[in-house]
Image (cartoon, rainbow, N blue to C red; front, side):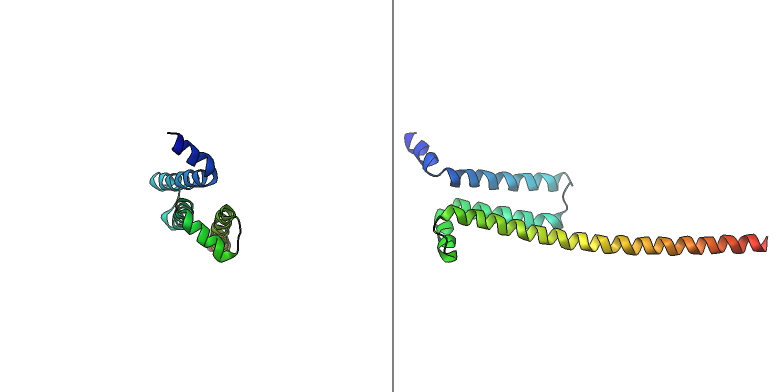
Length: 129
């Protein structure tokens, strides 16, 4: 019992990141199940959560990533992985927002054209009466 307590104390950051990433994965899966998040948007979230979980779980992998990037303190690499994941998610949201903005503009223009056509048809109908 004392050994597991010592492990938790010595590896607080690792334990916290494992719990946090597992919670994120479960949360995303629940959002998908409740249809609050579309599958196409959830893939990047799940990918980031799984990557963060794996890097958190396997300390040698985290140390390898940190060493490859030239980071002395390995848990700082964990933060870097989190920031990079958030960056990719923000880029995906920017692309989606841009597409929606363009679609809204096109729909507004089409509605304006249809209103003008209806107005013209009403005027022609009044003239013929």
